[in-house]
Length: 636
Image 1 (cartoon, one colour):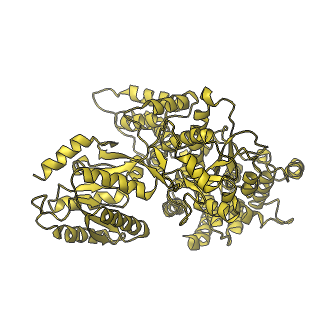
Image 2 (cartoon, rainbow, N blue to C red):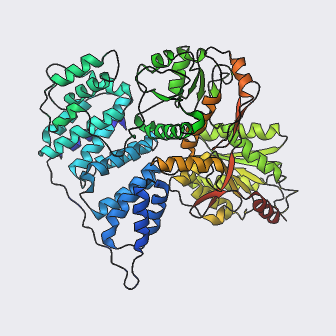
Image 3 (cartoon, rainbow, N blue to C red):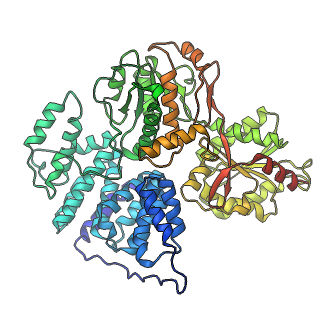
């Protein structure tokens, strides 16, 4: 995609002055007889105002089929905001399109654009690029929306270390914008996107600023971003603040000199990086406060804040060190000896940097990552996050309880699928089980039916459980691909297999994936967060979040909450040997909101994950007794 960006930007510049064309929107006809159920919209509106985002999203989706046409715009807006806050970017983007259909000028507004950019940040890099490029090339969309998409693509290119001709093309785009309001939007959007980008991208852009071009867009915004970043660092604060005070730039939005435009949707004001000295036995998190993981960091921090409101932890401060800042290693290193435990980081690159700088030998890092570098766990750092092995162990424990000894794995021929298939095979063989393996090309769905058929044909004497080669199939692939894989299994009249999924199923269903329940009566997948049935620990966390206006609790809130309790009660000194830390870990006893973690004598973590089944409208905790009975009946 990056190779095509200069050409795309050139196309945009050439057509910038053309009039925008919008499709004619045919108003929906009101139901002829029955009055709309307005109460659902009222409830969704109230849930959004109360920041109960999961409920607001659910109510908005339920209300979509029975509202008056003039209510569509408000309902789409509620759904877009709620889905974004609930970490469901696909649903948020679909709601934005409904919003735009109801109001063709919607994509000119900052609120619409802000939701769009943040939703894309929640997608994979490839999917985000595809969506942005599609909007960028759509000549029927407003110049405001195409400008937003162009800036999004440019900043992502800078994050990949590629500058190219993008500053010049952005300069031409700005010059071709005939309206001051459009120029102000371009300034605001670039300022916001730079603020959310990784520091390396901002540094790359700032390197293009010269004395001659500093008063022209986009270089003026590059300069502003550089000075604003320097103004929060102690060593450069005074000089940067003076430079900002003396700065005079011909901007369409001069208020940007005081700071980028505030956003009602970006990180809450309570989430701030630690900028001053930290004293006492503080709970310290090392997290990225900007970019695509900023919202996750906000949830982790909100959970930690909720835990420390408990009177038992009164006086224990919470500090967040921003791993997106170039000096984060120095900030951690400057912590007092009383702070021996660090929560995070969240990214493998940040962990690798801490390890390279020998920071892990001076503090006990509990990484929010599914795995560490080979041999590190329990020696250089510890894990505070579910692993791939935890997922497989939860699945196999349940399968063994059903008396299953023969398994199959059907995986895509790509890195994740191959790795999970290899781990699953090793786990099965270690338990003395038998396994058959088959694969399929991920980019060629027409061959998937053949792959399924070949696998099922190898299942000897499938009429009886005792004679079957396998009774469970492991499917390590995304939820969207299950729409083709699982019906293909049923096509061959194999309806009795226990279907085993991974956390990708949870992510896909939670992101708005559709469930055909008739295919999943014998299906399970693992997860670390279970809201229902409620437990005292999760109820207390939920109450604390609601009182703070933070909406419904989820896994990331639980992770932050549990780490804060864990860290506050883990009494070790800085410099404690790994063996000393491992000895302390054996006595950890807290009221977990997420699935409980425990550590063995070597410091390796294990998380006893919950099991879920896909059901109509989403997923639900597995009723093990009922599923066991259904499985036994299927194999009679």
